[in-house]
Length: 45
Image (cartoon, rainbow, N blue to C red; front, side, top):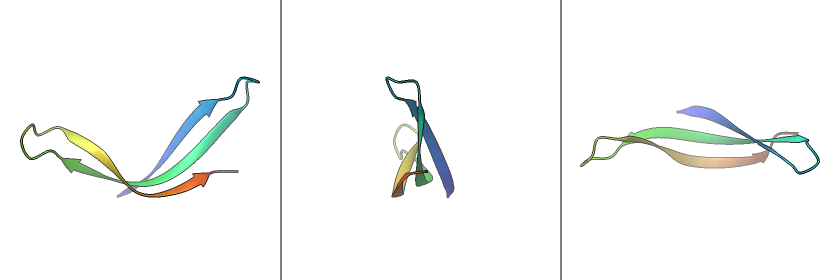
């Protein structure tokens, strides 16, 4: 489990960050690991 931070830019150039609690899982058939979001905390102000 880990805390994931995603960032994006607004049209005015300001940067907004979002926090999520995520967990890596492997797909049983393909074996590719993907992130499963457990909880979305919203914007980090």
